[in-house]
Structure formats: C-alpha cells, structure tokens
Length: 217
Length: 217
DNA sequence: GCTATTTTTTAGTCTTATCTAAAAATATTT
DNA sequence: AAATATTTTTAGATAAGACTAAAAAATAGC
Ligand SMILES: [Mn+2]
Ligand SMILES: [Mn+2]
Ligand SMILES: [Mn+2]
Ligand SMILES: [Mn+2]
Image 1 (cartoon, rainbow over the protein chains, first blue to last red):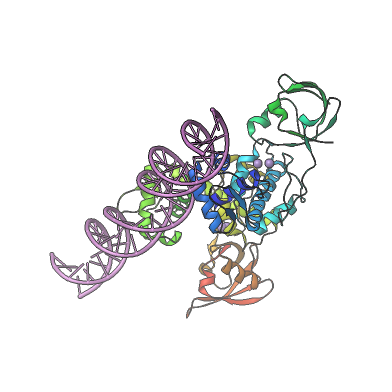
Image 2 (image 1 turned 90 degrees about the vertical axis):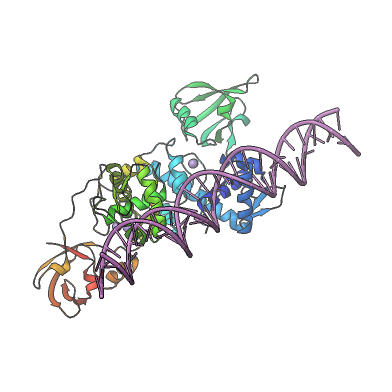
C-alpha cells in the first residue's frame, strides 16, 4: 500500500526528474513539497525499501518502474478530476488544483477508469497538461515556450506551466485562455518582456508570465 | 480543521446516538469504528476540546450543535458520492460504500453542492438512506421494518440498513432491489423467518435478512 | 590541494492516532 | 451491602511523518 504522503513524494520526483529517470536532489524535493531536506531523506529511504525508488546516499533519487507507474497513476487521477470539476461541476480552471490534490489520492481503479469514460477519454487537463493512460503513457504535447518564438510567429495557447490560482486569475483578468490564437509582435531584450496580440487585443507580458505560456504551432 | 479520523468518530456518534442527541458509550463507538475503548476515550476528549462533543467521564458522549452539523455534512457527502457512483459511473449498489468512505472526507463546499446539483438534488442514496441538506436536515423516511408487518400486508422495499457488499450481493442474487413490491405471506415463530412474495417469485428470508429490510406502505 | 560553503544525512523531538496492560469507576449478582 | 464482573479511563509504548540542530560528505573557490 502506498500512503498519501508517499504518493506526493513520488509525484514530486516524477515531475522534477523527467518522469523519475533523472536523479533529483533532496533539496529540490524539499522545496517542491514545502518540507525540509531531512524529512525528504527519511521518505526516500522508505520509498527505496518499497522498491519504488532507487536511492544512493548523496546522489539523489530516481524512480523504479513500479514507482514511475504509481506516480503516473496519481497524476492521471489528478488531471482527470480537474477535467471533471471543470466540465461537470462548473469549476473554473483556477479553482480545481487544490481539490484535485485531495481527489488524486482516492483509491479505486474502477473509479478512475469510469471517470475517464464519463469524460470521453480526455487527453489533456484544463491547463493543457497531458493525461497519462492506464499504463502511465502519454504523447508529450509538442508545444514550445512562447519565449522561443520570433516576432511575427504565431500559434495557439496550448498549455500553462503554473497552475496556481494567482497565475490563472491573472490570465482570466487579461482574457487569455487555452485555445487562444496568439501572435508575438515584439521582444524587449531589456527585461525579456513580450508584446503579443490576441484576437481581442494587444498587450505586454513580463518574462515571468511568458515562461509559463506554451504555444502549439 | 476537523481531521479525517475525527470525522469518522463524529459519524459513529451521530449514527449510534440518534444524531448525537443520546449518550453513546465508549465501547459502542470502539466496536463501530473497529478500534479499542482506550483510543475512543482519547479521541472523545479531543472532540470535546474542539467543542464538537459533550463529554462527562464514565457517562458517554453526545454531539454539540457544531458536531452534529459536521457529522451531517460528512454523511451528506458520503451519500451524494454513492448516488454519483451509481448514477454516473456505473457502480452497483454493493460497490459504492468503500469508495464513498474515502470520498466523504474531501474538503470543498463547492464540490458537494455542485455534485448535488449535477445529480438533480437527490433525497436518498442507493440504499434508501436520506441525504441531509446543506443545513444537515432531512425528513426521516417513514418506512417500517418488514418484521413489523402482518401476513397479508404489503409495500415497497424502500431502505436497507446493512450496506455491506455481502448483504447487498445476497439481495442481488435473490433479485431483491429497492422499489420492489413485497408482500408478507407468512411469519414463522420458530426462527422468526418470513415467507414473502415479490412480483417475480415467492421466497423465505431469515430474520437476519428481515431485520435489514425496510418497507414503505 | 586545501579551505570554505553548500548539501545531505543523522540524531533526537514532537504530534497524531493507535495499541496493550493496569487501575479506577460503575454495574450486576448473590 | 459485599463480592464479582464489566466498562471506562489512565499510563506507557509504538509507528508514521514531520521538524531542528549537529555531523558528515560533496562541491566550489582560491
Ligand atoms: Mn493541478
Ligand atoms: Mn492541471
Ligand atoms: Mn455507505
Ligand atoms: Mn448508503
């Protein structure tokens, strides 16, 4: 049995280390999970004992195949629940994350798979993140960060990296949503800001914002 | 904040003591929750400190108004989730309880109330149990135990007291479902068994089974 | 290559929720 | 009303998960 806390660590390692294939440092996990390095060391040992993680002292941690699958299943559940909340329960995309953090730990294979079917087997969550299938696989979205575009380039807003409600509310306020057509007009080297144009208006976004916007061409 | 464990104790006290109004013994709670009397004493003290329970040493426990409301909200969530699982996710009534035991602890007022709306504001769960409203109120079902009927009496199966999958699977096997018209044909004093007749067939049920069947007239 | 800094691990505490065993209070019998 | 049995509480222990402070190892700077 994988506990709730263990699931959160697996998720963190999965996200930080390219699906757990690249070694992740104790400190990186601690920061992600908002805990302390010493707590992380303890938990990593436990995951290693359960054959969910590979751990060598002082050399970071990766996931075993079992750990990778367990992590992918939690992420699958998280994202399916987010879709459910938006599609069926009138949540907006900035309200779903915290509730999904709770729902992702509910244990029932049938529940996940029936939910998947109810939602019509969605491939992406409300933030554009891909939803792993039962085997934990997904085709990585071929989107690029908006900072990699040149003035004149355009595409569709396909994914946002930050799912915090502060960031999403900023996008709401500025009428930016997934699926929007966006054209890059100008890049300002001084502060890395961008001038962009949507169907409705022209605006300047900071590099902090740009970092989190991914465009499919 | 009420913890998951505290919520389970509140529920137990609510169910055992007529919505928490009648004093419940330490041992009764221990048995219900499958723990030990000493653990119960500890937890009751904590609930009393949080003003959720009234506790006098050696005299059992009742719920405060806040405790009653908290318990009713957990039960509301439990039953709404059971309806959701049956109505939207193709679960059968013997598969929902364990999953609902997990889902009832998810914290989000919006989630519960939107779920309620999605389901069309149901008044009863798949086992015929009433669903409390936002204020924790519900009109108690006016159903009677089948053992109180006399031969010749008939009515509709409206509620089952035991929600365990063993019992529900027994009913499935014998083609008994909520809403079925049932007529009592004979009562056998030797073992308190009943002969009943449904639209499809005639059968004998033990007093153990009969104890859990409630009929509305 | 040796110091200084940073990172990671270890040692020792704390909190929550359990448990067992023993003590205290209450209830039941004779 | 005493003796016995049952129930409840207390005391002390344990496990999971987290923390702080100190020690050990790895990395960076000179
Ligand atoms: Mn999320
Ligand atoms: Mn998401
Ligand atoms: Mn139930
Ligand atoms: Mn039920």
